[in-house]
Length: 278
Image (cartoon, rainbow, N blue to C red; front, side, top):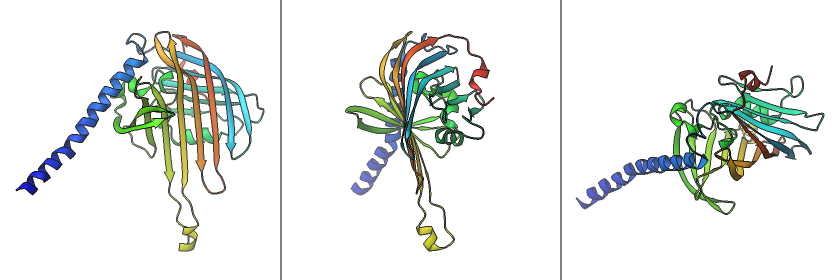
């Protein structure tokens, strides 16, 4: 009888855990949304244009830097990430979601950057409004029910000396990406997103050939810092992207840092501005 009682107690604990995690998620999302700004400042339809200077640095898979002006523009679910570089071989990056389709503009005929190619294959990053974090009006946690996505609490860890909460983001449509959101435990601000994809090694024609194959790993990291008030919203003023591909004889790693200095709100934005490949 005692053994059965212990099993029942253990079952109840296991069953209760998802409920506890759900409460943690709901409380964390509520605190996070409140930390962004008032309901009036967060109201739907309010456009944002956030601009500054950027520097892209290729660390693996080549050498070189590219600097210039960059911006993140958004209105409702539409998002644009654009940069112009002082580099003739890589003059710009233009990535946009027009509310229906993701667009990645070739910087030369038939040529897109590895980052743009990755985003074309994983357009959920734009279509779900995840790109740019709270810089964008499309940020899904502002209207999670409309996205029909699920959040799963994933515990805490130390990130650059700060305690953070982690949550898995599961899009309604599914997909191969593992998406993890990070929130500062003290401020509830969103400080990081990680996107990871692992493609298993292909099968070779023989067992020996299969043994020589290796998996391919993709990782995109967004980091946000220097939060300050802008027109009623508490927004990051530094935005860093780190993109890496690990595969045999063809690895790549780059980082792209944008320092944001100009914040414009309620400027009319035409839907055509988010279609970058015209």
